[in-house]
Length: 156
Image (cartoon, rainbow, N blue to C red; front, side, top):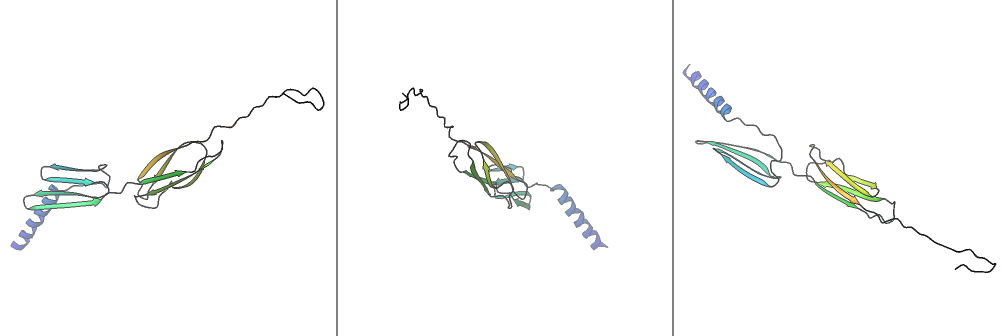
């Protein structure tokens, strides 16, 4: 009976520890470069794209937990020049970082203007970038002439 009471007390003690130190984190990017915060016995440090950890200490008890932050999606956008007024440019959008596969990447045929491309990774994180496509001005021509008054004559 004494052994059951001791096991019960240990069980209650462990449950009370769990409840007093329970925490929850959601995996999201906290800082664009890195940060460290110390409050009481809680130390939280983070670096973009690196492991996010927290350490809680109380007496001789230490709890460390963490998860990997997503790496930011990086976009690469290139475009061919438009050589003639009213022509088209080929825009190539590619991505790295995040988790493949990506949506919003590929090759696009566009006319002159400003375009916003949004790329989303498999986890639903996205990044966007604008590109402005220019074109040459339209060529215009004009001419003037005078009437030829006689057969074999010339215009001035």
